[in-house]
Image 1 (spheres, rainbow, N blue to C red):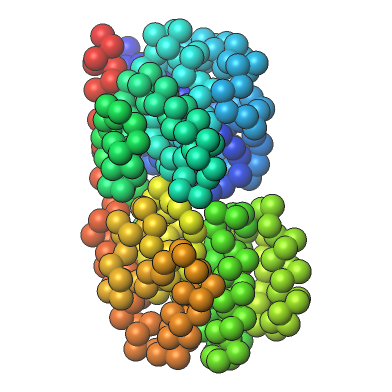
Image 2 (image 1 turned 60 degrees about the vertical axis):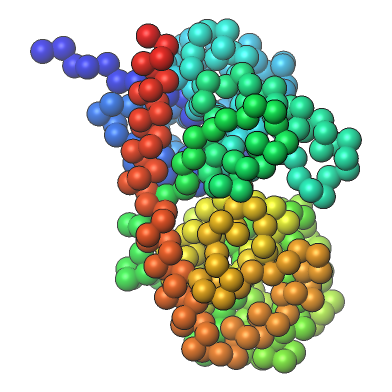
Length: 378
């Protein structure tokens, strides 16, 4: 009996560093039905994600570029698609789509585009924002199916892009990996953080849009009032050096631990009490969902994506972005001072994650989209 041919899906991502979109891709290719699908990954930079994929046994290619619409790489992308006998292309994010769309369409391959976050934002110069919207209009109109990851993500597309349509597929969290009942290495002991501290953790890229400098300033004010707080910041990025300088300037070194990006995020979360994400914008922050699945109290900015998940003072505390430093201080003090509040937020955040963000549901939806796109083509 002849073995049924598997559907070869090229999963495309802008970079090999691990962020929300990259973590989603890792979960997708690890857990997708391998009897039906054979995922192959194309990344446009190297990084820790590539090793993770290799360890999983997922075939991975790198065609290096850090620019969107880099037409000098399109020929190499098309050659790869031909050599790998790709049946379908799934682009994760704007930069990936901009660099695979032409090649896929020229070969008659269906393209799905997951919008992990729009490339246009409210804090951009109006001309930059207009150009970004035009770019997204071009890409979404030339993609066979667009996927939104949150309601606000979808509504922003409809607001700014004429005729925009998408299917909604929210992220799912791998509850085997992010399981608060599991045993983890003692990260507090490893890092020398006392057991009686209330650990506030930031796990994200250390870049402007995640607002790490505002968090450090707010934490310095909060810990002066509530000295049982300890800040653990995990990640790398172009503002890391500024964070180090600011921690030293504010003399909060003994209350702060800085770590590079770590692979053992579940263990880091297990060692923490509160997860903070003061970003200026989001699509749907997977790191937030992972922290909620691990039962952490949440403090996060009231922005698209995040506000779809968190109900203020039910399963987290939302703060406005107009004056982040000032707006973060009181919630940080409150969660450090009030163990009862922390417990309520922790319990509710876990319940919300369990009910709404199932990896099984996400995988079923993505697999069905792949099958639908191929049916349309045939």
